[in-house]
Each structure stands twice: as structure tokens, then as C-alpha cells.
Amino acid sequence: MYVSGYAAKHGGFFHKHGLDVTMASAGGIALAIPAVLSGNAAIVVTGAGMSANAVGEGARPFAELPQVRRR
Image 1 (cartoon, rainbow, N blue to C red):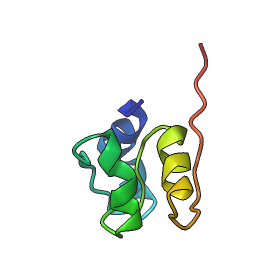
Image 2: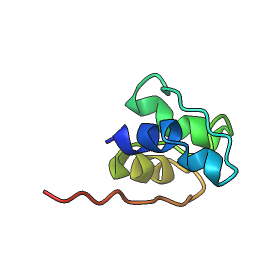
Image 3: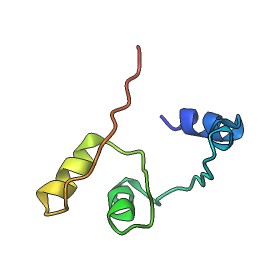
Image 4: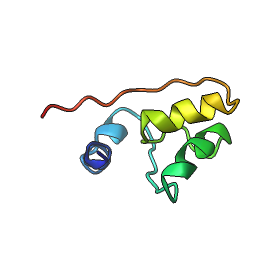
């Protein structure tokens, strides 16, 4: 799930496009969405259920990018 982000960072993709990216753990699945909503993170990788729960609990709706994987 996370390998594409690390590959892009270490392969120079972000740098090539002028992006200064820092990758870090939110500390657990339940902490990823609060990190975005508080402004401490711009993008997180988490399940759609966590996003739906946040909006259901009153968070302002935010963009979610699905990850599509082939099996």
C-alpha cells in the first residue's frame, strides 16, 4: 500500500516535479484523518471507512483519492 509513495520519493519523482515531500507515520490508522483535518498533514494513506467516519462525525468533507490495485 505504501510502497508507491516511498518508491516515488527515493526514485526522485517528487523532486523532479518540484515537490518537497516528507513521509511519516501518523502513529496509527485512527490518527491519519485527524492529522489532515488539523493541518498537520496534507495527504494521508488510509481506508475509505476512516474518511466516511470523520465526515459522519461532523468533519468538513474533503477529497479522497482511491487507490486501485490489480490482483
